[in-house]
Image (cartoon, rainbow, N blue to C red):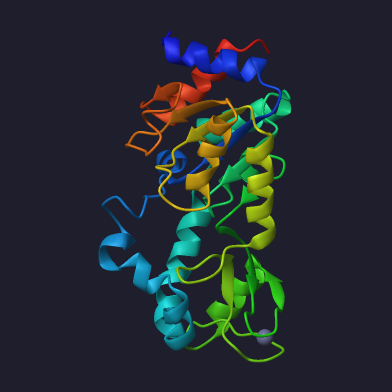
Length: 250
Ligand SMILES: [Zn+2]
């Protein structure tokens, strides 16, 4: 057993308020490519451009030509052992909150109770003009029924988007507030699969360290906190989270 795995299990076991923070790296093992890495849709499109509020507003057909297959791709994947291990730790009371940058709903599908989704979620459709909200199924049905592939609001006629936060769009304030509150209460923070480059998530580990808390990072690539984290793991999250679970008494 890796010493760092044992240290992480011990830290979670002793924690009063452990918070888990996840990013794209936890879902790559479910088959969702990180847009910062090579492969798939992201090689054909510049995500910063096509997944932007500007493209959604001015070129809805192009926006939806990209997003419609992406919804199918995200709906066809399954949670992996890392998602399930986090849900199991919540169930045992060892993890009090989960903050995620992911919009793929895999944490909820793995059984996590109430993930704080700071970049929004694919679980709904909405109109940015009049705030009409619909289910994801309804959003997809409207897109598929439209000749140009663009789902529209039944109240005001404007094109609709999913609940995923676009580049150039404000992040959901309530979720951001909750993420900061959890970081302010955390004595242990475990980061899984995030490179901690994007705000607000990039600020949360510093809050924990600033109060003398423990930071554990389980991310394959480098992060700005590598020098200050007490526990640093670089292997596959699905394997390592399963090992952490096994290290802890059931
Ligand atoms: Zn509307």
